[in-house]
Image 1: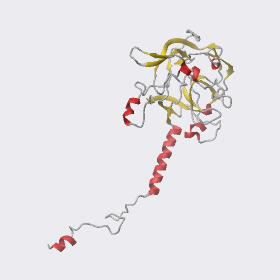
Image 2: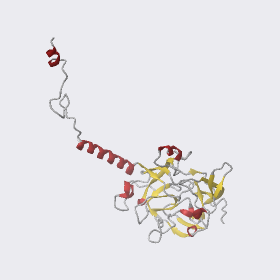
Image 3: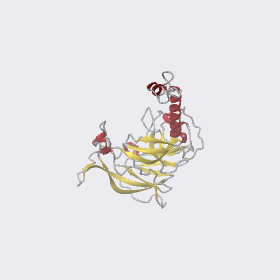
Image 4: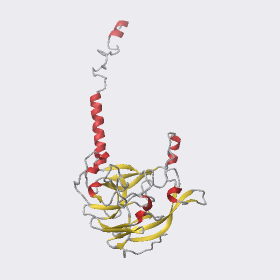
Length: 309
């Protein structure tokens, strides 16, 4: 075999017939229409999952301390109470009172609620169900004429960081340095137990106007919600706009967007663009903690002590 045969024969490299195609004749250009269609379908699948099954949430306020801290990330399930206009991500649907497969929350559930005047998500605890009579007197819940069980427990110690600064304007001289050198916010705490045995911790450290709320009857299609940080929560006790930023009374079940299930992780606010700060910003011991209330044996209602200033 001569040199010409080596070049022109079977050993010669294959060359594309024309620019833009490979040896098989297939175009190497990206099909942008197909790529965009695939991306759109993926985004629709994510939105559908967030609207119908579960969605991550971020805690931006101190209204649920000590059980939820600013910087906590959690998962909210969308299906326990059925679906309504509020289930859709970003609240893109018009307000309405319809519900699909509707269920009623239980005492002690932590839920996502939308106030009557704006499309924001509030996170609060269910303390009264449809048909209940509820009153708040001197900071204590009175349910159907009987004070709920409330007991003094040791003060909570919340580590101070950028997301939990223990602002003196809000908490006075609650800052304390432990023998270990760590600074904590020490606040008086109580254990509350609702009629179904749901037990949880609340903070109540001062007298303020929301400590008293005249008795009302919760409508059949609504629930009454309160924050666990009783002196710093715009909840069902607080008026809605234009007179306040609360929930303005009982919240319609159609405005309940889901139930808080568990924490995924928590950040202390020290994270910056520097990757070296990312791992140090994680709060230890909070990941995967359940947000469902503990259940205590139901006993005589109104037992326990309540010491207020």
